[in-house]
Structure formats: C-alpha cells, structure tokens
Image (cartoon, rainbow, N blue to C red; front, side, top):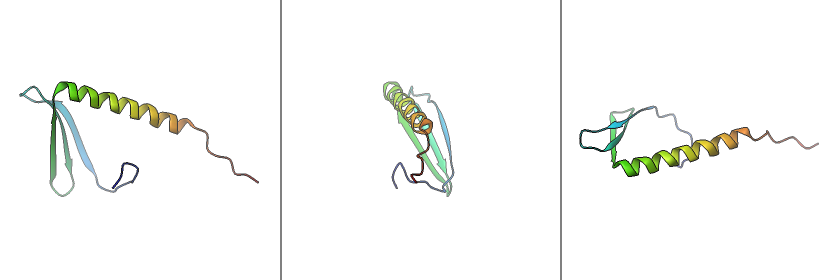
Length: 71
C-alpha cells in the first residue's frame, strides 16, 4: 500500500503528551489494531512541519483547474 492508494480501513487518531514527556500519536484501527507511536518533542515538531507542508501541497493540487478536453 502506498501513500497515494485509497483504503476502506477506518481508524481513530489521537495525539497528546505522555507522562514521560513524549508526544504520542495513537492509532486505533478496525480489527483491534492499536498502534502507539511515541516521539520526543523535537521529532514531533518535525512531523508537524511535514504535515503542514503536505497540507500546503495538497491545497495547491486541489486549486489547479481541471484539464480541458481537447476537441
């Protein structure tokens, strides 16, 4: 599965600090899958920057006009 492939799998996402001073991204998916991912604060900030850059790129893709049919 790649980043550009769609999926019918539903999941819940939670993000927050842990009592150990880490940032946890917690993913819970169908079938009882639980995936806690812990990052130190610096890594979490890098991930946040990557998310912002991806959101900006996605907006740019969505803002492009649809291609015209050539006749």
